[in-house]
Image (cartoon, rainbow, N blue to C red; front, side, top):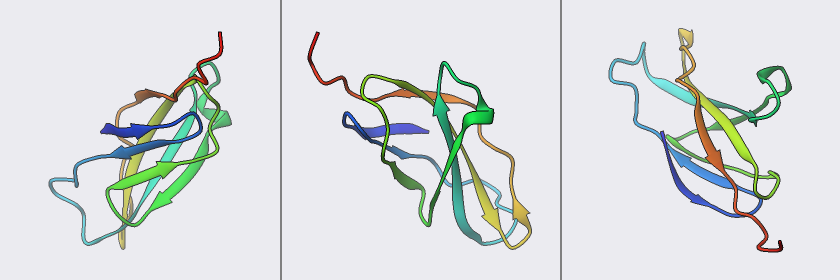
Length: 92
């Protein structure tokens, strides 16, 4: 997974398609949360493609992100945890 772009309030991510999906991929589920919190406080987003923009984030924060695919067989495993940071507002 890698970061395509970031703003103060959003992160755009892209990830490779699974090599051996268990059927046709219906969509992806993205789990994310601020790094100093834990995954019990996580939020979810969905994407029809292997890119997603997560909005409504806080400036200058590091977010932990995981993604998993959904097929007719159900959800796959979450990916490893990756960290991405939003831009700061530039005010010291």
